[in-house]
Image (tube, rainbow, N blue to C red):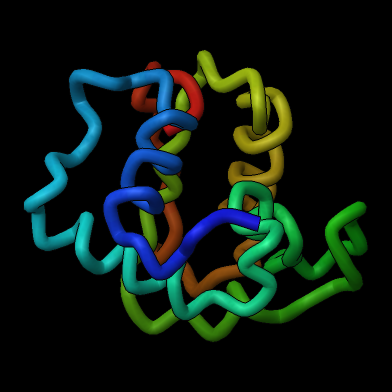
Amino acid sequence: MFPTDDPDFVYELFKSMSTNQKGFLPRNHKLTEYMIKAAQDMPGKDDIAVVNTKFNVTPIKTVFGPPSDELSTLKSKVVVIHGSEDFIVPWLIVEPVTRLAIIEQWAPLGKLSLYDDGAGHT
């Protein structure tokens, strides 16, 4: 377990997992504060480095969980930003599932899109 009460530690942990060190949000950025607070409030802090892979938002059963209708409830546009150089969560997994979600309209029409930022795991 790591000291989630220390915001600098949480920031450095997330930064260390990024392959885009130069482009990582600065420590004093508003979104950085949001990310740190979300991490500190997250249940199961022991698994904070992998907790984002423990849920399923698709209407098909995956290794992460049973089918879900979460995408159908989108009210705002969501852009899935993922790097084709990611070796932790490979593009070859994210890209086809996201495209299938768009084609099959698992989300309301026009609410879901995909963008390859060309980076690794950020």
